Length: 69
Image (cartoon, rainbow, N blue to C red; front, side, top):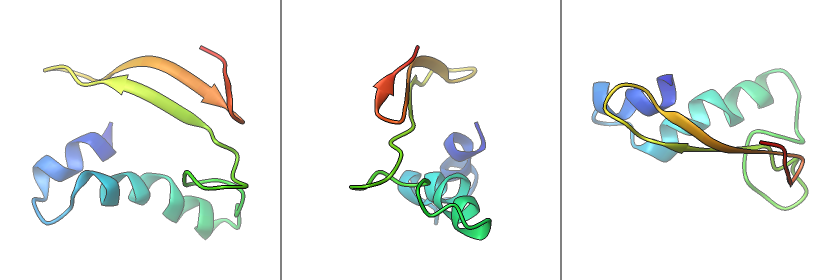
């Protein structure tokens, strides 16, 4: 949720930068080089959301490239 709110709270940060803040940066910080971004050879864990007025709604989830929800 923070990644979705951050661009509204800090205009200098766009959505891609906000998402990196909560995905790629923490993964790199703990040595998880196989995740944190969408790229060839990465785990491909994804969450598709729909923005609403109140909270984002999870629409679907993929883990290691396979849809699980």
